[in-house]
Image (tube, rainbow, N blue to C red):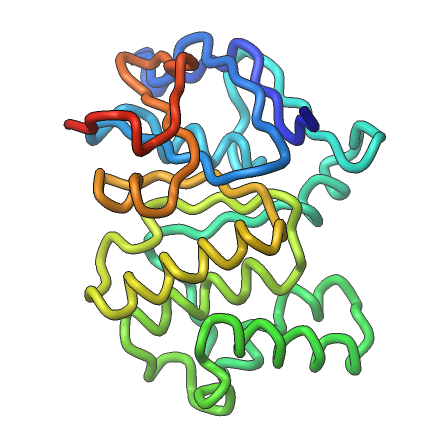
Length: 228
């Protein structure tokens, strides 16, 4: 097993109210991990902590790349991506929006163009590359957000309810994209969803967050009778 992310006793509270309580788990390099739980269970908080956007009150997070443990946050941030339910959009073209994380990393223009073309093809937005991003539909915007997250070629991709507010057609496109990413081994994917059917369709492993605890006795998603 090649571990890319290890959580040890993560604890987080807001206003004295516990949200996460001693959450521990090790994520292997392969597969799609689906995190389920009721509203307010702490799923989004856990993803934000793993993506280094929030700090836990207690506990430890360890990342691994190749054979070396990464020590500096800047190194970690260059190898992880988080897609939120509401994607931020710049008032520029689709291509410029997707290229942004490469630009701030000072990637050469030729490489930027190559990666943007490739990733827009993958998410089915090549024909929209010169369109103003603000004119996209909600589903297209979500796919653009996926492209922007993937263009840096992350080792770990976090998805927080990636299809929560989009139509069935775009949901299917994103689910097929996730299956393609898994087949290509492009990234370890850790996602939340309220849809048990989606968990079965795209997930390899199920994790359940309840009462602040991360249930680590997980099984293949198709073996679990999902509820809640």
